[in-house]
Amino acid sequence: MSPLSSPRQAGAPSVSFEFFPPKSEAMAIRLWETVERLEPMAPNFVSVTYGAGGSTRERTHDTVRRIAQQTHLRPAGHLTCVGATKNEVLSVAEDYWQAGVKHIVALRGDPPTGMGEVFEQHPGGFRDSIDLIEGIREHRPDLGKCFEISVSCYPELHPESRGWDAEIAFLKAKQDAGADRAITQFFFEPEIYLNFLEKARAGGVTMPIVPGIMLQPNFNGLKRISKLCGASLPNWLHELYEGLDEDNETRELVTANVAADLCRKLSDEGVSDFHFYTLNRAGLALSTCRLLGLKPNPAEAA
Ligand code: FAD
View 1 (tube, rainbow, N blue to C red):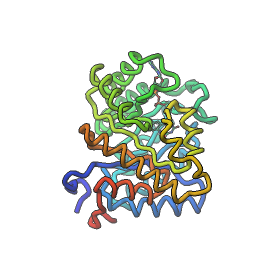
View 2 (tube, protein in one colour):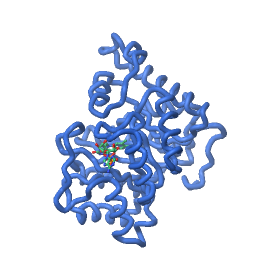
View 3 (cartoon, helix red, strand yellow):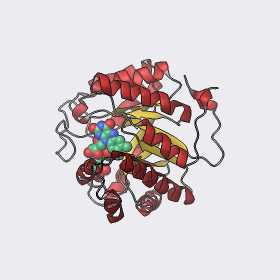
């Protein structure tokens, strides 16, 4: 059965999965095992990140291309504006198209030193994600208008935000430039997403805003990244992970349950699509899907 035509299980959500490109042989084995195990979940799409500063350009591209060629999955390649000329970035988009990849997650990105550092536009590069979307749409109008384009959004504001009005206007400008969908930064309280959705809709953003759900069982790592990206960690979450530093198994069970509980609360409010930050861990993504009533469909496996 073609994944495009696969029916969604009644009442089950539609999911997508984010992976990162592997840095070593061992990580490559883990990634491909993850891809293989998640494929039968018939995700709407899977995406592959682009390291800070464009540091994973080749690895991202190879991973996305291999998913397109060797699985039934529909991959999206993340693309950033960092450290490259417009032509270099557009040639990556062109290569994606040639490899059968029709979906790009268009981002401004962070400097090579990572999140929290100041972004500097490359002298010949794109200014921000809007400039990038416009570049993709205009570069080859024949291809540009066929690419599906997803963008980021920030329910608790981006650290460089100029305030809510500017944030929502900026997201609306991404939509006007040609974005088809926004994927949120991770968050842990349903109200954070629902309040943001209300603001975005009031500001004229009509595209789907898909909640990004974090599956990170390493709570110390989560604390570090939250601080940098401005996502809050509620007290109840600190309490849940308290004393579990040496107990990976329990942390994983907690992580899947926290994620599923958040998705269920959002489902009750009418949300039906979820994007999981899998960190290339199949077990966590699979158990979260199971808790949401989503079961594998063996017909989807390559
Ligand atoms: P933009 O949305 O272009 O801008 C970031 C923020 O700056 C805006 O939200 C707004 O607050 C402010 N801003 C900028 N210009 C204006 C303006 N003219 N008016 C008003 N406000 C403005 N990083 C990677 O390096 N690789 C990845 O693969 C990657 N994937 C991601 C996927 C998702 C779903 C998300 C949410 C983030 C991802 N990131 C990734 C992180 C992202 O690169 C950083 O958050 C980066 O700092 C901003 O990139 P952006 O595309 O969100 O920027």
